[in-house]
Amino acid sequence: MKNTTSYAILCLLSIEPMSGYMMKKWVDRILSHFWKISYGQLYPTLEKLHNKGLVSMEYRKSKTAPTSKFFHITEKGLAALTAWLEKDTLDFNYRDESLMQFYFSGVLPIDKVIEKAERHLEFQQEVLDKYTADMQRMKAEVPNPTRLQLMQYITTKKGVYLNEARLKWAQDCIEALNWYKKKQEETKEEET
Image (cartoon, rainbow, N blue to C red; front, side, top):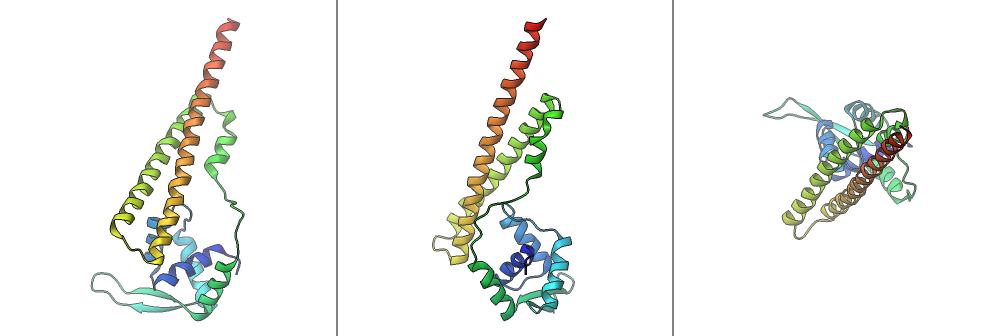
């Protein structure tokens, strides 16, 4: 299996049986600083995992919601997950659309680029505030964490560090862009 989404789903199911809805909410709430998934990825991947015997499925009735499909990791799925987890993944290679846009934003007026950088700064501050609050909540709620809770805390801490770096980067961008804009304006004044 090469599809990382498959392993992400197996990871979630190694915690407890979940419905697709529960998996999506777990990712959005806890893993979103390093992993995202859409329903369009989730359900087809669950079907493939089920067809390969890596997950099983059961229907659960609820008093408050319609009957839901709940998925369980199988022994075969746990073996595949364990083999994947034992491999080293040292290459931090990801796609960052905002950085791609920023890199080529020389075609935009500088004021628009500064505005984009300022919005990026605001967004990163909101994300950082969320992860910082999550870490504080985790510390307060769990003085003696389980191993899973410890791993959640550690990954959330990385989210804090990454967003602190992104926030610093956005601040530096705004400073550099404003410096460049001022230099351009001074050059124009000298020419006239």
